[in-house]
Length: 402
Image (cartoon, rainbow, N blue to C red; front, side, top):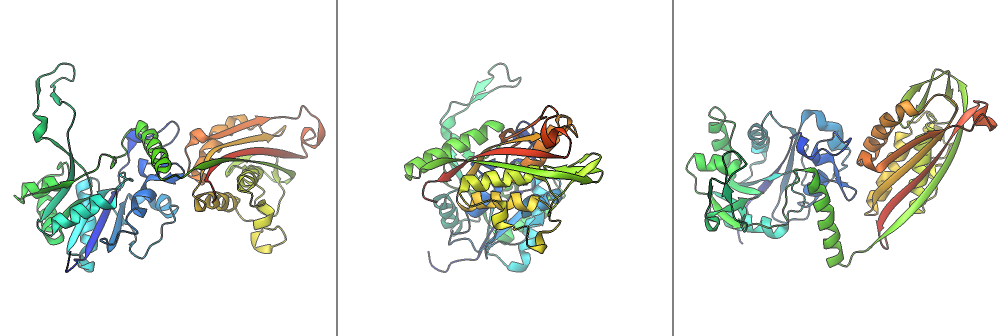
């Protein structure tokens, strides 16, 4: 192609994704992980190295600022996210309005929950846009399609030769779709996608070749499907993984206070834990276990207690550092197992809250976190309630050679 046009892409990621919620995981689906990386991070990063794309604009929910920030995405093409509206239609309109000052000629609109978009599909949409005002990638329907009014009995069959499954990114002349969205604002908020808005104002929508692997994460089973897909892709690309296991052990004395901090959770007690940082023995030992699995030393290696700047530091800083080290080595955390040993306070009533807190800090599903509590049967310094001890094991997977 000659005379390359300026192209922006809007990544729509403001939904709540409740159908995809896993057991104990209340994060929107776009922030849940596939093989150690959030869905939305995978989606956005796909466009970083695509030569056709000049601008990337995420649309997020106003309550997800911290979740998005924790993705730690950085690229010259990437704009600061824009808050979406109550519907997808309003969210896209907000994105189109935010892009106006950048004067794009073409715009692509993509679902944040489609992390396996390929450059081939994107190029196909862009090429077709040079001859059309609206284009969607689509795949032919290969299953027999039945119609049912009650969901129990068949009411008829459809001619599948005329049926196609629409995907994203859907591409448009920027000004054309912007004007269409503004007109649709006072008409309806029930359009199924942006192509439907183009159809509504009588713009012909062309088809380009989609990809059966360009799946949209919608239900819990889709996460398993996605991990299987990644595994198959890595085997095809001759990428192999190795499993690493690390262990950690930590002890802290009690001193005068009225609560202990464990796993990022404040638990009422007649004392607090003594330490240079916030003395969160649970997060300390998890950090050591992960760093051990990486063979990258321990918490003291990276955050020496002799350095004053770590005094009083929240231990979430240390655990996030360890998790980030896993991600930078193209790995993922498979499982974390924490044991807390103390006579008091009683830990069992708080284990679920600890699991949720640790899962949030590590940005992994709560099903990968185990928290157990035990006593020392009144023996030793733990039995005398002079302090507590923690132990942890971490299982991770790394790309072999990283």
